[in-house]
Length: 255
Ligand SMILES: C[S@@+](CC[C@H](N)C(=O)[O-])C[C@H]1O[C@@H](n2cnc3c(N)ncnc32)[C@H](O)[C@@H]1O
Image 1 (cartoon, rainbow, N blue to C red):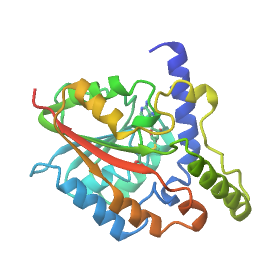
Image 2 (cartoon, rainbow, N blue to C red):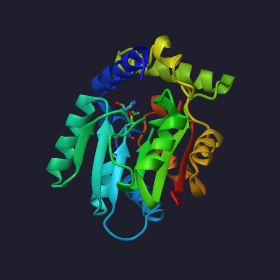
Image 3 (cartoon, helix red, strand yellow):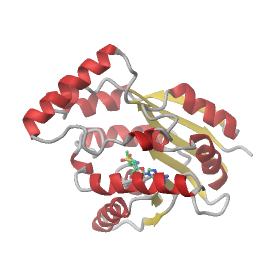
């Protein structure tokens, strides 16, 4: 990694350090209802083999998603660059009595032996990586043969006039209702310039990364149901801008 790339990743981690305080209270980030929790679990259950699995949540943040796997009885390892996100994840896991472990490290190059995990999962991470192709290849490496890679991502900003208008109204309402800068926590141009999917990852892109990495039995699931459940808990000012495409793509390591 070059000094400049390292610097960009440190800057990204700093932004998520700040966001860690309120992250779980944000609809679409923290799980806000039992209905949403069950919807996520039922999607994941349908993709996993039986037994107690070793699961890696890369870019785990506060580990909202990884801890669902712990609730389903699996052993979870969380990896993230943000110390403060990891601290929240550790606190949550320990409150629930899970034996999950958390490490600081780069998701593009997870510091684990080849063939360690039965499942690698991540949500809302691929878009914020400078080298998503390398990341997917390396996630496949740390999977055991027969292991499954699950990626959840979406297109946050499709650049259309409608999306721009929705965001404008949402930002304005947030400014009025919360008296805070709605763009706080957004990436700087310097960071965005390094991210090929800064507006989100279209499913075709995720599928391309899976294909390049040699993952097989690839499935593309629409997460419309989860999104509709999430929307129900959103105030109008958030809901109006929540017109994202949202997908889950999974594939298996055969060789
Ligand atoms: C949008 S949050 C998603 C958190 C979590 N996966 C979730 O679904 O709630 C993005 C997370 O990715 C982490 N992250 C960004 N770049 C990373 C990298 N190169 N390596 C590890 N973590 C990274 C951030 O620190 C942040 O916690």
